[in-house]
Each structure stands twice: as C-alpha cells, then as structure tokens.
Image (cartoon, rainbow, N blue to C red; front, side):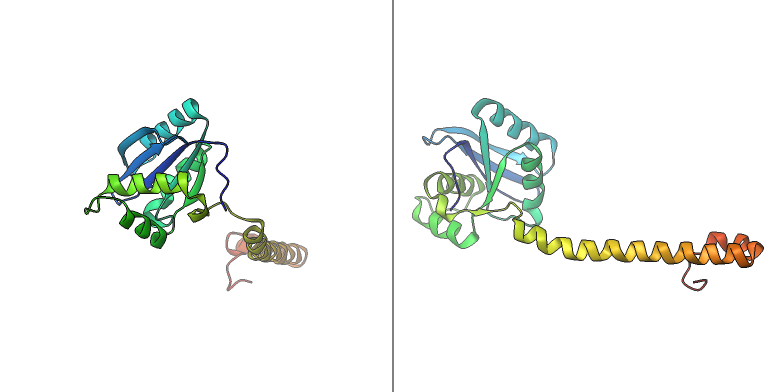
Length: 182
C-alpha cells in the first residue's frame, strides 16, 4: 500500500503525446490545480515547484508510466515530488463509476487524483526497489569488468611492443585498439 499521510497535494496527470492534463487535490478534496501542461520540461517543473512550495509534499500520479508518461515523471522526481502509477484497469473501473459519459483528459486527471487521495491501495510505486537495483548491478559490474579487461589487454600489448619493437609500436599506436591489430 502507498503511504499518503504526509502528502499535501495529489496531482493526477492524464498524459498525452502533445500535452498532459493535471488535476491537483488537497487531502480534503479541494481543487488547487486544473490545467493542461505541455509535454516539455519547463512548465511542468514550474507547476511542481509552485505546488511543492505552497503545500509541501506533492504526489504525482499517472496512468501511463512509460513512453509519454516518462518525461513528466522524470521532471517530477527532479523537482522533489513523489511519483506513483494508477494501473489502467483500475483507472478505467473507477472512471466508469464517475458521472459523465465522455472520456476527456480533464475528467481522467480528476479521477486519477481522487483515486490516489481516497484509494491509495490502488497505487503502485514507481521508485526503484533494492531488488531491482541489485539485479541491475550484476550486468553493470560485468560490463565494467569487460572494459577493465580490454584496457588491461591493450596496455599489455602496447608494453610488449614497446619492449620488443618500439618503431612498430609507434606505427600501430593510433590503431592499437583495433580488433585486427589485437
């Protein structure tokens, strides 16, 4: 379950290709923000900073964390906001319970914000966990080991050439790391 005790504003974002619609609610349900935001960094960052300065902790919730939702989530993290994801199926079921037939960005953003405020158990964290971090350190460590081994091999070849045939080492020096020379 997602912890919401210290959240000052729940900012639901219905993300889109060209623009996102944001809807901000206080824990009491008062609307404090309801506008369209461009799919760029400066304007959303200014909104996140303004809400954070006025209300404290801001929780930014999206219904699509990948692709179109990646930029606003990255900007929100950079602005010091918490981030969460409302899965699409939960989002649609909750939206079906709300009055109004039309699917519009403003309605979806309001549904996202209100669901986060009233049903935090529907949210999923988007923070990298220790388990994910541990899984990623294995390939990164392997890659670093391979790079160190390639550098060591290149330096060893260069050292042997310098000892045995210095003029050949000078001639090959710019291409010494090429696979054919190795």
